[in-house]
Length: 127
Ligand SMILES: [Zn+2]
Ligand SMILES: [Zn+2]
Image 1 (tube, helix red, strand yellow):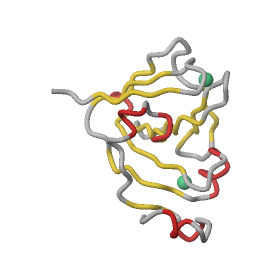
Image 2: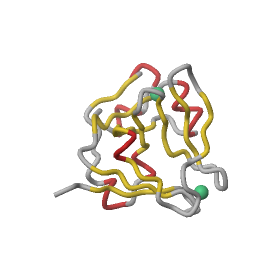
Image 3: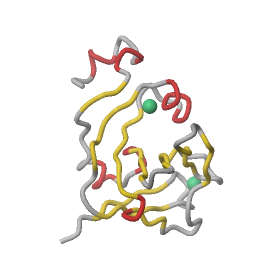
Image 4: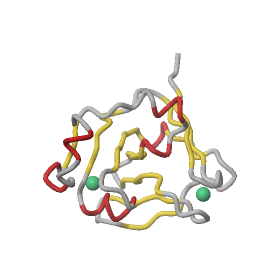
């Protein structure tokens, strides 16, 4: 049976359904993720682009090209961070955009750019 996890932006204009096994949930504290989200860590999960349906009233999210390989995705109405759409055919979704039940299923397994986390991080979290 297909596993479908759902989520969307703060205002509901952009919604998504992600179908299948989520790939490599992980935190990232690189500068781009911090600036994109306004948070010290952003937690990501990957899917093949074909597995993600943008099924809210706004359709696909707005994109901002952040590198030669990828665009950051966000809601054009409320500005919520949603993820990244890569030229290579993958989509990264930020786990904080998932609905509560889906978020519970997306425990991160590692953390990228650990050295850029604030020092207090280790007191609160294990990864
Ligand atoms: Zn929105
Ligand atoms: Zn990052």
